[in-house]
Length: 477
Image 1 (tube, rainbow, N blue to C red):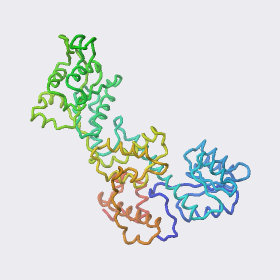
Image 2: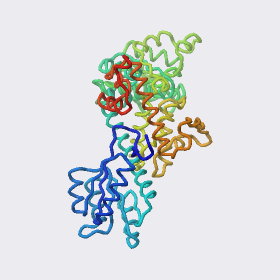
Image 3: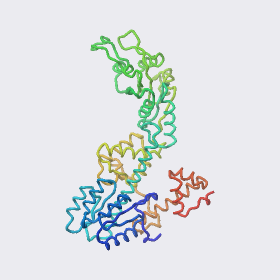
Image 4: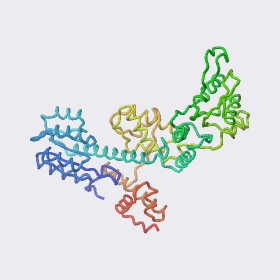
């Protein structure tokens, strides 16, 4: 490859940007078209007026419009207003003369991506176009991720396609519409309550709210009255009857969160509920029948607690009819990008930052990171980045806690020394792509369909890349 060949503004081979140039000066249009075709691999069309441009936009829907402000008939500002009203995702860059800078600034407030003042320097123009095209590529990649997320949710709230999360989702789907007691185990932050909510949401009890009890949060005496209720006069201050949480959850589901911290005395009473399906409020002598499905969660080693006399063995076997173990994030690294993208979309909407996207270095940095707090930690990191972000893409550094150093990058390969940044970046991406494709074919004995699936691509896109890098599948069979 030579430095005269056009560069892709996006490392994604499946993304091809489209650009519409609008100016009443035909010489300017010709110059811009030649320059952009020479420097970027993207589709380019031209229009000599805003009216002609509007017809092209309606039929073609380009990714970006580069338009002059001052033109006969409809001017560039009016064109911008029509574009933003009908097609708000199209990026618009304004070209202005000396006398129209104020109008261009107004255009920025009305949704233009940027403006360039005539007469402009070609390098400045190319830099502005490159930034815009790279942003469009990021937006397209994020849109595809969101689309895949919508297709992947086998259970409500579950995101990811790793074997570990697929196994959990399948187990939840099979158990949801039963009344079997389920013990949900896993490290802190892995989504145990989310699994409980999925079990309840897919069950026949979903029309009534699930009741969640945080076992470590209350002292033993208060927790007992909260769980089972009490009669008036049961103790000092009991001036009226109180319905307990088990009765509140009648015909629904109750989640006993962190069941390992339940005091021994309450474990005995809970065992009776599981065996007899009835409760006895404090101060009463008659039992009350309840129809409650019991789910329990813990991040503790219950078997170890049993050996130390801190957890009843008979209660353990009553709870442990079926166990769901939530996988730690380190065992489902392929789910980190879609999870991060989901949190970005969620918090972007919550905090009115819907245009935020991840920079190219962000997701790889998240995948490499050690997540001791699992999904909850990832969620908090993305939330913090959204709250502190400006309008630029969220970079790997933005996702790092203050005071934490980002590892220094490894030295450049020798064949990249002395090259311009864009060409060095292009060659590095191409070297990686060729090596990745070859490895995928090697691992799948030259089977293109299997290699494409393993790479997370469709077969057509994979074959297109093979052709581009001169790789023949038969060489790996």
